Image (cartoon, rainbow, N blue to C red; front, side, top):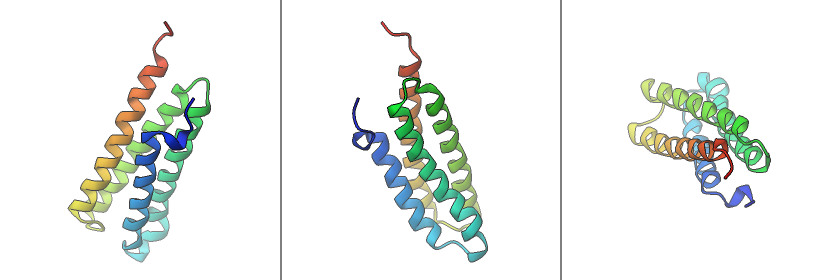
Length: 117
């Protein structure tokens, strides 16, 4: 088993956390504490779930939760774009990273759920 920090999904999730930290720095103060913190917390939870899935015998439970967290993050980022808290290019970069993490998580989940041969 590889260290979770060596996985591409972990690198993409960390890049997403870094981007989210930068994006939430410039949102209006009214939303910074609530929505900004929620975005950062979702990114951190995604990274925790990657580590849990990597260490767990039954990975599907953690990977399902991971996919759900990615969807929540995408909803929040869309709200940020719609409210013009972030620019369209910033949103595009964030969605590129969430799509990458989501695709990798779903592929990992399918592989883990497949019967052992």
